[in-house]
Amino acid sequence: MSSLFPALTDDPSERVALRFGERTLTYAELAAAAGAVGERVRGAERVAVWATPGLETAVGVVGVLLAGAAAVPLNPKSGGKELGHILQDSAPGVVLAAPGDELPAPLDGLARVDVEVHGTGAPSPAPVDDERPALVVYTSGTTGPPKGAVIPRRALVATLDALADAWQWTGEDVLVHGLPLFHVHGLVLGVLGPLRRGGSVRHLGRFTTEGVARELNGGASMLFGVPTMYHRIAEALPGDPELVKGLSAARLLVSGSAALPVHDHERIAAATGRRVIERYGMTETLMNTSVRADGEARAGTVGVPLPGVELRLVEEDGTVVTAYDGETVGEIQVRGPHLFTEYLNRPDATAAAFSADGWFRTGDVAVLDPDGYVRIVGRKATDLIKSGGYKIGAGEIENALLEHPGVREAAVTGEPDADLGERIVAWVVPVDPQSPPGSDELAGHVARRLAPHKRPRVVRYLEALPRNDMGKIMKRALTS
Image (cartoon, rainbow, N blue to C red; front, top):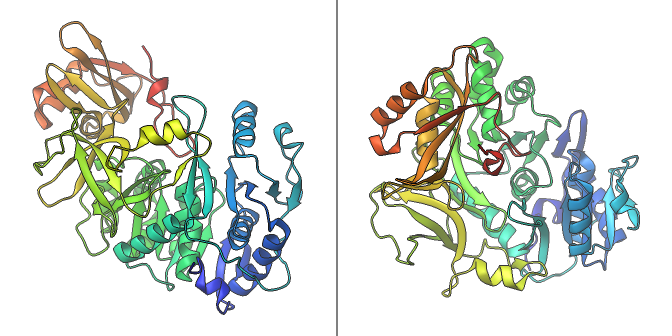
């Protein structure tokens, strides 16, 4: 029953804990504000939080955790149907919001508490068991209504302390990011992570390359982002010396939530001398692997298992992959203290998510390099293509396509083929829509870099790829 935030509860200082735009809170101020929220929600089992990218969201979530309750972050962009499902499923006792925020109709019947960021008093953390739920985070729901992953307090501790080990993350670090706060990446890593270390977070509110340059040149040491953000950074670097200077001075640049294309890795490294490191996690598992701060930042990999994480690859017939050859594909399965407890109200889905011997089935497919680095090749449901007797990961083909100078964005899927079983389809956003690279040219480009059987058989051109709020390509929206 250790404290989640020792710097907040043991002896809060005047060091800045949170900065959102021009608004800041020291640890002492955050302790008072969050403590006041905690007193107002004490006794509730679950508390909804209207998770806008502001101080109130951070204060609200910390207050809920101090009270021993579970926070249910709500995406302000959720539609009425999805929001209604989440509220009915999680049955929160109250909703926290910033004063003046207009809440949508599905929240009308729920008691509201406005979060004041300048509270008075001291926090009195409730003594709760480490297995007690800390968060209920809803998955994207690509195959049905979103499921609520119940994340216990011990999972937060396990993941954040493992990342501190891997990234040499201390209270001296200042993190900058512009990620949403209804998701694990922006909320757990981007807000709770710095607070657990006793460091600082500067949230941009809205991501801009100018904001990144300003904060990294103003004392921030770490940057968290998703591939869309790093792509914009790579595009801006040639004409922005302040951005080059800021990234060059950063201690750690971290990308997650989707694969960062090798092309963007290389452009950033060439301009700044700094390598972006990648990590791999998901809502149900928090963080599983990462490139270590003292390791090799190898483009196209997500590093090695974090301390405390057991990881294996399993073939479709249940055989555990033993070949660390960079070629043998298997589904990633993990075990450890970082895992969620259950899907709320879904014992069937919870049981289906675990193997008989207690490993969580991630649904992601990968290969293992000889030195243990994990190289993800896609999602089992959408990115594992079975063509001509081969099992092919879409990710490596996408990276190859992005190395072509005429390709701005690329996604790869499979579609039924009478001869091959599935044929590889490339969805391409060309640099010049008036003169896109031809399908034969792109097929040859991939075949020369990978292997002939991995070349796309069909190329379809788009103005933009469909993406969600975290920058992930929504492949189910790509249809012929």
